[in-house]
Length: 298
View 1: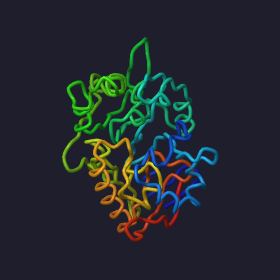
View 2: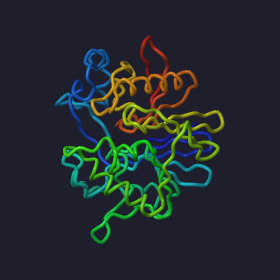
View 3: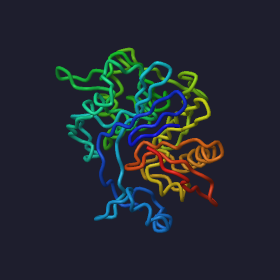
View 4: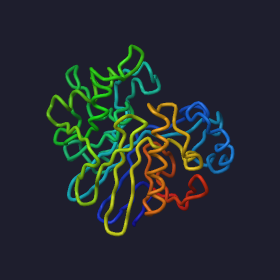
């Protein structure tokens, strides 16, 4: 394992973090119902990079992980995207960030990307699937396949159970998912796993959304798991049964989180969530009913 400030190499796989935006996202108890006691217990270290010093709000980042594996460039969870209309989450509306410039500075042009992974279909994980062109939405990465969980595609799609007049789902599906389906670039995967290459495999971890997944990496003696939104804050290491208010099924999300973290602790997998600011990945160990951070990475 080789680590720098914004990258880590695990076996033969290089991993680079590319941030879109970071900031306060809400009060701990609002984002994670029932987490208050665990938050107070861990507040001293949560304050060092995971809590806003002024408001006490949870600090979070929206970011993508870029992997170079088996000769291919893989982008995991490409953020919110520019120019989106998100009335249900106004803090994600109207972005105009330099995300593609940051991607370029990491050595990746859109045409270089071979594979895009959406761990689940939420607006802050699928936005840069597409970009605006001539008044419409086109795939940002013209040569890429896009791996989308079929369960989420169906749940958030035009005939899905998630559609209500008061959510963002119709908008995000129309601007970020439908264009890559219509271009023929989407792969709607399902089943117990989806093997990408010798080092990378997707596995279901439902609850946050019906199709939420994790990306497992095994290369040489190194192991990692990209857990998407199974965790939004390291406070959930202390209280893994506490799911976010954004979870479709909180009980199922908690069961998935505990199962994934137990394996990570037992098999020495580096845990890489989607939204941790500052230190972005953690080595963990079991600690009573929860987990403790042995070492921060990236």
